[in-house]
Amino acid sequence: MRLVNSFASPELSWHNGTPEHKIKDNRSLTIIPTPGLDYWSKTFNDPLLVKHDAQTLLAQLPDDKEATFTMSFALLSRKQFDQTGIMVLVDNLTWVKAGIEFTDGSLRLSCVVTNDGFSDWSTQMWDDWSPEEARYCWNTTIAFEMRLHDER
Image (tube, rainbow, N blue to C red; front, side, top):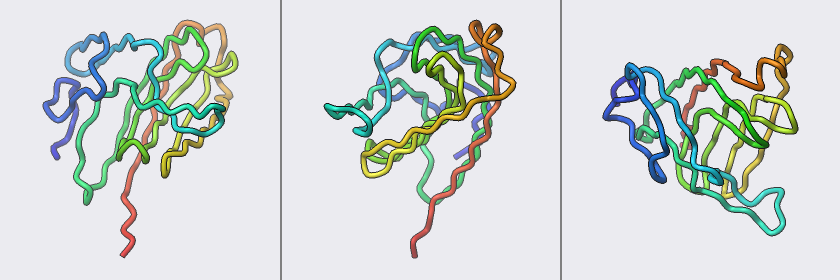
């Protein structure tokens, strides 16, 4: 896999359909998400909630390769669980999404790890977060490093 440094890269393709979006200078992507879509599996809901329909921009990575993602995000939050971030999708039973999410009136760092079809969600407050500024837009940069575990 080549280095992906443009949203126009042929290495990237939409999964679960294409949301309304704009690419500016091949380096900035603005997405207007389709409402009601998400990734979540089973945990915390009765009846069990299974959602694997969020529209994501993905790059395929061979099983024997490592990857490092560094992305900057801006989120215009409007309602509970609005979120932006990165996703590592192995299959519908195994995936990770991490980024920023509007939860209980605050923007938080957020991560969902799903193994064997069960999601586990964690959030963390950001000390420098300002509700007045965040109501309109919040920016952060997240680095995420992935290494596949070799069980030999």
